Every structure is written in C-alpha cells, then in structure tokens.
Length: 136
Image 1 (cartoon, rainbow, N blue to C red):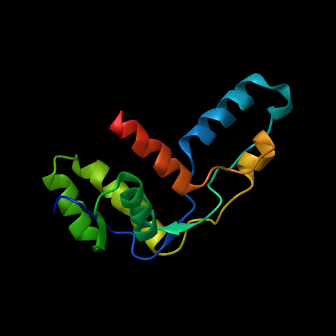
Image 2: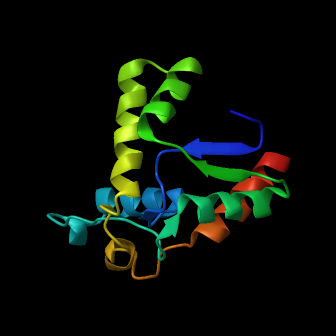
C-alpha cells in the first residue's frame, strides 16, 4: 500500500455516503422529539458514489493527490491484517466492501428528509468541511 493510495475491495459499486452531522442531528431529533417515536429512519446521502468518486472528492478537498485502486477481497483482507487489524475485523470490512462492490447497497433514502424536514448533506460538502478541520 502506497501513501496517497486507497486500496479496497469495492470494485465499481455505489454507496450513498451519509454526512455524519446528519446522523448526529437525526439522533438528537429522534431521542428528543415525540413525533419520532416508533419511526425507523434509514439514513443516506443524496447521491450514490463509487469509492473512486468518493476518494476523488476527498483528494480535491484536501488538495492532495490520492488514488483509488480496486483490489480483490482476499488481497484487501491480507493487506488489512498486515497493517495490524485483527483478522475477524478485516474479514468484516472486506465483506462490507464486497457487498458494495456487487451493487447490493441500497440507493439514497429519504430518512434525513423525513426526520429533519430537509435534504441530506452531500459528500462533497462533507469532505470540504472535514478537510478544513484537518488544517486547523
């Protein structure tokens, strides 16, 4: 694994990455508002991106060159273990990535809109906001 490279077994599958601030805001609303009792909110971002597209957004936001490389699941698991992750954890991560890679992830959902009455934040905005926090 090279610096500036993200190697994952997710192939070209798409994932509607959710903004963690949306998750926190929905959690607060659900825990404090009676109108949320009995509701189930599946949360996602507004767009389903490939991991390559997500890495490109992070690279752009960070002002760095970062590339995404798809690898097979066994290689991904081996690399994670070599980096010090427990084998069971590495296997779980790879299983999730392969799930995405097969195209088995659901598309964007309406959970944030239903819970908060607004559209979810996009991944680009999340990456830009997060990159600013890295710079202090």
